[in-house]
Image (cartoon, rainbow, N blue to C red; front, side):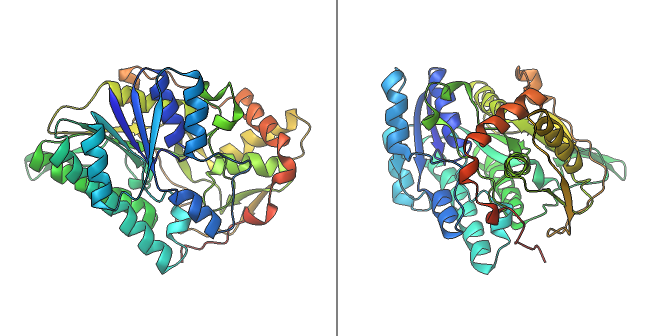
Length: 382
């Protein structure tokens, strides 16, 4: 089918484009290089260079019959997104096109306003474009498990059955986000639920946990097809950051007590979750929510796993518990459900020592490029 990927240059967007193309879909990626430009503005760059979309698509299209096309432009601009929909006539839209960093959203007023205005405006423009030009299209939106926060009850898959004073109704599971970025994702869900009720949209909202890894099946032929590996305190996810710290000889930076527990998944599982959602669309008038993760770990668990894998390579790793720059619970109950994607056929890739060693060996190749000055936390929630 014709799949438009908004934010198709990003950490997950580009691997998704390759994966869907490899499975026979006609893919258009759209981006305005917001993430690249924000990284430059904060003087943080990925561990190794990542080509821009003209080179990426050319590399892919040289060896594959299902070509990937791209368009550069700002999805906040209505004329741009309307033109894309008129020309491409998408059957599915995968929505990654947001400022993706919780720490960046907490830097200052300017970064907060950019996050708020960009994320909500792009989601709204997407909804209006679907309604006007492709009302039968399926929206696959990347949400985050961070929308739920850390409630002291089990986290259901998007919805909660409530009995109150003898009556019963199903509601969206209560959200209590821990950053402004996560709050904009809650607003995305609310917007999509409203317009699904009003206009019978078809929407899958994926509550994704933190993703780790860089290796995907589609990037084996040329390492220039690999995605970003960010390890700084703003754009680097925790496990990717720990891997780089282990190689650089920097103590692993555990915030506070380290009991913060989340649901994690390998980047390969992200791609499979997206493809399963694309190929098994939600019904018209349905907001379908999946909790997208495969395993739960505390930060201490991750530090121990990285230390063990690094030790097998002769690396001496220590752990440093830092004062927590974030306002969050450091010890808490955490029991989220995640049956929906497994029932669609997801076969998880678990976090084994072999997976960690493969990542460590890749980072070792680029040890000389590691900038140790961007790893320690400098962004405070308060």
